[in-house]
Image 1 (cartoon, rainbow, N blue to C red):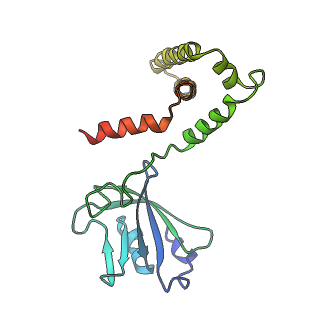
Image 2: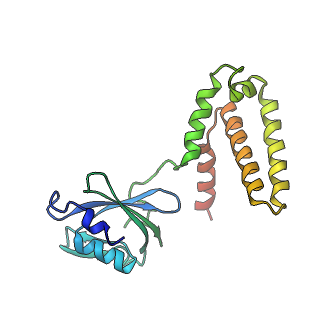
Length: 203
C-alpha cells in the first residue's frame, strides 16, 4: 500500500484529500475524514485509520479517545488521484454520537445480489417463452414457493456432502428462487435485510 502515497495529487486540496471509510465486511459507508501525506503514511504503518483534523490542526487516529478504532484492510485511490476509499474493520461506533455510521439510517448494500434482484424485476415483464423468471411467475405463487422449498432441501442435502462446489451451486439456486418469491409478493432483499438488522440491534 505504500505506493498509494505517490499516486495522490496532494496539490489539489492544499495537501489534504477526502478519505471515505467503508466497512470492509458490509461495504457500508461509515464516515468521511481528511488525510494529509503524514496521516496516510501513519494509517498504513500503524494499521489504524488516522486523519488530519482540520479543527485541531493535528493528526487524529480514529478511536484514540473512545477506543473505537478502525483497523485498516485496504486503500484505493480514485481515477483523479484526489480521493481515497478506505476499507476498515470498525471496533465500535463510527460516529461520535454513538451511531454505527455518521450518516444515520441507511439502505443495506446487497452487492451483486442487488444487481440480480434488479435483473429479476426486469425479467418478470419478459416473454415467458424466452425468460425463465417470467415463465415461473406465470405459474403462480404456489409453484414459486414450491421451487424455493425444493432448492432449500437440495441445499441442505449438499451441506452434508464433501463437495463445496455443490453446496455453493445449490445455495445460489436457493437465493435466486428466493428473490423471485420475494418479488412475487412485492417484497425485496432490502426488506429481509431490515428484519435481520432490527433483530441484531435488539440483542
